[in-house]
View 1 (tube, rainbow, N blue to C red):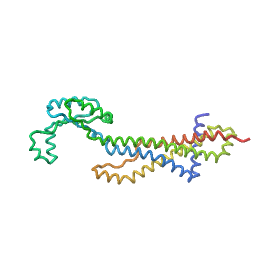
View 2: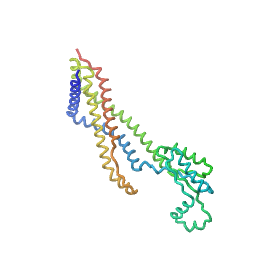
View 3: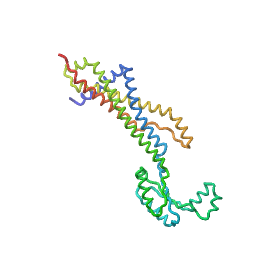
Length: 307
C-alpha cells in the first residue's frame, strides 16, 4: 500500500467520524460537556497553583533566618563569621547588622527613644541576616542550615523568620498532589465515557461492520473510524475545558484584582499557561484515543460475519 493511499484512507476515516458526530449534535454535545468538565477541574487546580506562585513571586526573598550573636562578640569577629557564612553552600547572601546599627533602627521606628536614652549599654546583639538560595529553601535544607549556625559557639539564637512561607509552600505541594489524584480519577472517568460511547456506536453499526468484514475488511480497518471518533472527543473536550477555564478567569479576575489592590499589589489573574494547555490537549487526545481503542478492541472481536 502506497503512502498516498494510506493517508487517503486515514483522511476518509477522520472525515467520516467527524460527519457522524455532526449528525448527532445533542449526543455529541452532552459527551463533550462531560469530558470538558472532567478535564477542566484538574487543569483549574494547576492554574490556581501557578497563579498563586506568580502572585507571591515565589517568595524568593521572603525566606530568611536571623542569627543572633552572643553579647560581647567583637565586630571584627562578626564580620569574619559573615564571610564564613557566605561561603556556605545554599546561602545566597548574608547581611551583617551590627548592634549599634540595630539600636539606631530600633530607636527610629519603635517610638521608645526616650526610654532607650536611660539605658547604660546597648541591649541588642549583632545579627546576621541569612537568605538561602531558592534551590535550598526546602524544610530539610533550612533545618540543616539552622543547625549549622546554631553549632557556632558565638551564636546565641537562630530564628527562622518566615515559617509561614514554608506552610504556604507545603499547601501548594498538597494542591499539586491533589491535582494529580484528581487528574487520575477524572481521567479514568473520561476513559469510561469515551469507551461506553464507542461501545454504543459499535452496537448501532453492527450490521455495517459485519458487511465490511465479509468483504475482507480487517479489524484494523474497521477500528480506524472509532479511534478517530475517540480522538475527536478528546480534542473537543479539551477545547471545551479551555473555554471553561478562560470564562472562569474572566469572571474571577475583577474580584482578584480588587483583592490584590487592597494589599498594595497590581497583580491580575492569569489564564492557563502554554504548559497547562499542552497537558490539557495532550491528555484529552490520549484519553480519547485510548478509551476508543480499548472499547473497539474488546467489542469488535465479537462481531463476525454471519453465514
